[in-house]
Amino acid sequence: MSKNAVINLDGKDIELPIIEGTEGEKAIDIRKLRAESGYITIDSGFGNTGSCESTITFIDGAKGILRYRGFTIEELTEKCSFEKVIYLLMYDKLPTDDELSSFNEDLKKYSTIDNDLFKSLFSSMPKDAHPMSILSAALSVLSTHESENLNPLDPAQVDIAAKKLMAKIPLIAAASYKYSKGEEFNVSDSGLNYTANFLHLMFSNGSDKYDLKPAVETVMNKLFVLHADHEQNCSTSAVRFVGSSQANLFASVVAGVNALSGPSHGGANQKVLEQLQSICDDGGDASKFIAKAKDKADPFRLMGFGHRVYKNFDPRAKLIKQSCDEVLNVLGLNDPLLNVAKELSQTALNDKYFSDRKLYPNVDFYSGIIYKAIGFPVEMFTVLFAIGRLPGWITQWKEMHAVDNRIGRPRQIYSGENERSL
Image (cartoon, rainbow, N blue to C red; front, side, top):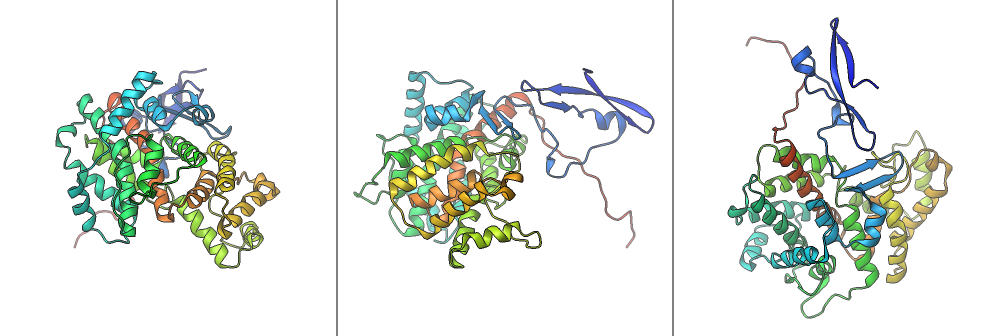
């Protein structure tokens, strides 16, 4: 096969290199196109544009494949703690027992925030502020106390900043929830692992410790692992783009948090629950809304079905569906909203209209149901996504600095007025 693609522009042949990834993905390298031809490419939403080469995550949307560092998501969720996956992503290898133990000790060491800082931060915010807004603001404030760890070109500082971000984001997330309820903030329990400690921070109430059920801890660990990275999505691209300006890791992660907050990205699982609630409020007839979704003349669409990347079944949803059923059984809930969710899921999975169009329930659908069952308020769902995605943001940011420090600067085609006079 030719090593170059040839494009004829204005009677001139322009040769552009072809790049092939280790999984057979092919790309035309257009980095010299403008210099050699004067042309640029237009790709709204960058759906056909590769912004980088990466060794972190591989996705095959047609086959429903997701791998981190070459390991399948199926194996990672079955055999690895979230901390182990964080280490794999950040350091490009599975840790030894000693390395994982040392890493966990660092996370526990950094899992504190000065109480006065906490109180002054939250006292300036309204009680009904969205937790994602609080998370964004809190991380920005936190960075002002980390002046010795902000140099993006110092690997030692970056490593400390990364661990501090991973350690402190559960504290901030849980504190935003406690603040909204008027309850005292909890302190980390060093005897618990990352996921269990977060559940403790969220749901313990003073001396009344959270009753941690193994099935709940297992499914939360799976959800964090499933969300840990997802290639060049909107929020990850925002982290890379901001980081390309030499902005520090804290500032870049804040950009990712803000990008994730949008309902078309991280807010999707919140939208799922809001729609389920509206169906319940309408009487709970799931079949009515299935019919509306199938009606071409009706603009209604079911949230949490189908995926932009996965053209078959979302592998994350396939893994989490079983855990969803297990958690609902363990918790023994009889919630009309969850009953509607299960009916929608079963109907869609067995309806030819949905299967023909590959409109299967995605990870947002099942994660929203699980979070609701565990007891998380709907407004916390996107924050949970952010906790899970943080290791991916950090890893992508580090890779961007190691491979290509060129500042991001897209081009445009101007379509406004020609020169005018007043």
